[in-house]
Length: 73
Ligand code: SF4
Ligand code: SF4
Image (cartoon, rainbow, N blue to C red; front, side, top):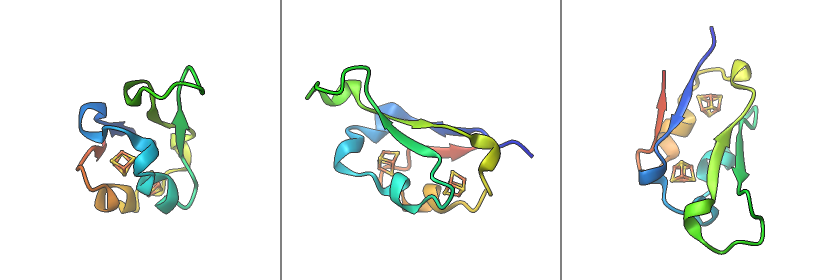
């Protein structure tokens, strides 16, 4: 079953300081992304989710996120 992983960017804030979802996801679906890699503006940095068909729905990302920013659908 395909899983949609929704990240609430308003809650996440600056993912460069956290990265917990990137570190805990075994299939490594989370990517740190900015359209401008040189930018220091936290608002342009995002956690993107790729290859969602590999998600096992383990729920680890939801549990580890300190901001409650991740929802599985
Ligand atoms: S539910 Fe598990 S496999 Fe799916 S994105 Fe979260 S940590 Fe990764
Ligand atoms: S764990 Fe939550 S707060 Fe941390 S980078 Fe991921 S989405 Fe953002």
